[in-house]
Length: 496
Image 1 (cartoon, rainbow, N blue to C red):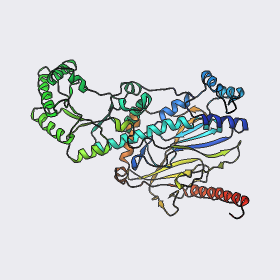
Image 2 (tube, rainbow, N blue to C red):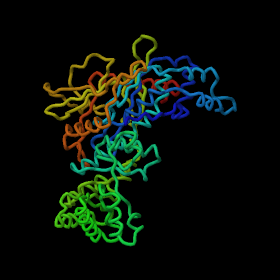
Image 3 (cartoon, helix red, strand yellow):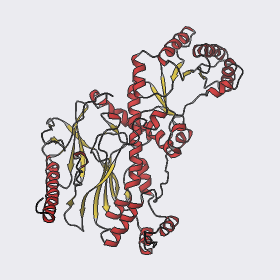
Image 4 (cartoon, rainbow, N blue to C red):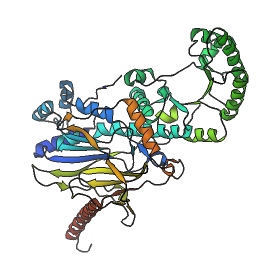
């Protein structure tokens, strides 16, 4: 079932509204502008990320409008002098404002890399500024969790991964977004019923230790559960003694079989999962239950799963919660939203660059697109180029921080553009794919990524670079900006 969760216009930071007010007061609010949303470094020290959150961003932009109650709240805000922050005419402007920007975005489930724009927003400066915070909120978190899910699923090597982090997630909305992103990242199911209803994600679940503890014996608990749920007979076996629990599950499996039912499997939630899964597999097979699955949980992540696989663990389904939905070892993606160009009327674009003492934080100018090259079914490099510049014929990728690092794309390589039209003049022109289609895209994209980029320890860096034209534009703007600063300093203090 598709979701359309309404995101209020006030899901933003105060400084977005104060800047909008200042644009309006200065008469530059209608200036056409271009912003890009991107991140600067890979999460989890990995070699790739999975773009996610576009669907919710589309829902937000489609319904973007200030409601009377929100404008009434803004009218109550005051400045340091006690007077209102915003004059009534500005609030009336917000009331009448209609979304009319162009938006291009990378489809969900796409493998992406640092400095590549995931979204490009073009339109009136005041509107582009308004949407920054909410778009970062949607894209940052879901991209982080989809990436974590993809890593966990890679570690599972084709085994099903079930997400069940609802109880440990950061609030109800965080849990819903995490379930959605986890599925797009490759998980097979969730325990979150609301996410199942909203998005059509398969839901799975059995019982907890409290079920077993509510009976006098484990045998009684398993028997009662199998009679109540004969079509969902998967038993949690580690409440008291794990291998004794496996034996009790086997006995109940025999009883189920006599009644025409079937033992679905067991779940291990503590102890040495490698040892217990190997012993449980032997016991189940010997008892005539080779199809009974073994589910494992207990603070799993990609590293633990990879280790258990290496130890020969006989686990069929991996239940991952806390360390998936919280992005456990990296709490945020760190995506940013930067101005790259402005123009008044139909004039030429004035390209913008943001400088920093850290070279990685210096932004890229222009109206950016990403061209991905591939050969023999594998991605071989991405070029970030400027749509406002001359047509790019030179297939050279230049590292934006190191002129000497270059990659030349072979003549026979094919290419595709990653950013696709989403909105044109405020009208939605993109047909959102189903969540299953986005999940399938993730799997196909990962299959096209060389193994060296997918390993967890010291992954090989994927080639991403600027086109020669964009690199030249960026360099010129940086030198001009730094030269202006030096000139100003010399004017103030000739001895400098």
